[in-house]
Length: 334
Ligand SMILES: [Zn+2]
Image (cartoon, rainbow, N blue to C red):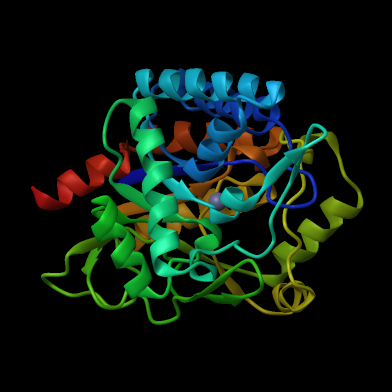
C-alpha cells in the first residue's frame, strides 16, 4: 500500500498564534527524525497567505523580518530534504495585523467563501506566487484552510486562475458548520483519488481537477472520553509542542463526539495518533491502495511523535511505501 503523510504548515488560528520555532521548525525536525531519520518524504501544505502577510509587513516589524527569514530558510531546507511543498490557504491572514509583538487576527474572513470570488482568487494567486518563488517551482496541489473547499465553483475559479491541478481537502462522509469552517462532504466517495469539475463531491470521468481525499476513520465516543481525560489531567507525553491556541470547537460538536461515532481523517495529530495503527490495519485489510494521512506540526506531542515512529517502522517492515501527493498523481496517470 502507498502511504501519503500530508502536513499543514501553519500557526494556530485561535487567541494565541504561537511561534515559528515551536509550531513549525521543532515539530518538523521531530517528525523527520521519527520517520527513518528523514527517509520518508512528506507533502507539506504551507499556509502561504500567512507567509505573504509577513512578507508585506516585515519592513515595518523587525520580529516579522526574523520570522520571514527563518521560514524561507526552513522551507528551502525541507525542499532540499526531498519533501513535496504545496499550497495551503487561510485567507484571514490577508486581513490580520501585527501590533505590539502579537498577531491580531481578523475573524470575518476565515474561509474563502467569506470573500468575493475575485478577492479570493487574488489572495490565493499572490500567496502562491510568493511560495513558488521561495521553493523554486510551481506548486499545483491545494488544500483549503479549515477543510472549507466549497462552493465548488469558487474553488474551480481559483484553480483555473492559479493553474492548480489537484486538491486534497475533502473528508468524505462529514460536514461542519461554524463561523470558521463550512463544508459538506457527506456525499463524497471514500476513494483514493478522483476527477471532478462541477461538484467536488461527485467523481466525473473527464473532470478537469483531481481530488485526493483523506482516508477516514470511524472514531468511537470512548476515544473522546479518553481525550477529555487527557485534557483534564495533562501529562508530559501529551503536551503539544506548538505554543499557541486552536480555534474553539463548537460545544454541539463536542457533545456529539462524546456521545456518537464520528468520522475523522486518519491523523498523526496529538492523541488522535492513537488510532493510526488501527486505521492502517483496517484499510489494508479492505484492500485500499492508498492511505492519505493528515498532520499538523503545531499539534505534535511526544506521544504522537512516538506513534509516528512506530507506524513508520511497522509499515516499512510490512513492505508499504511512503509517497508524496505529487508521486501519487503521477502514479495515477501511469
Ligand atoms: Zn490549515
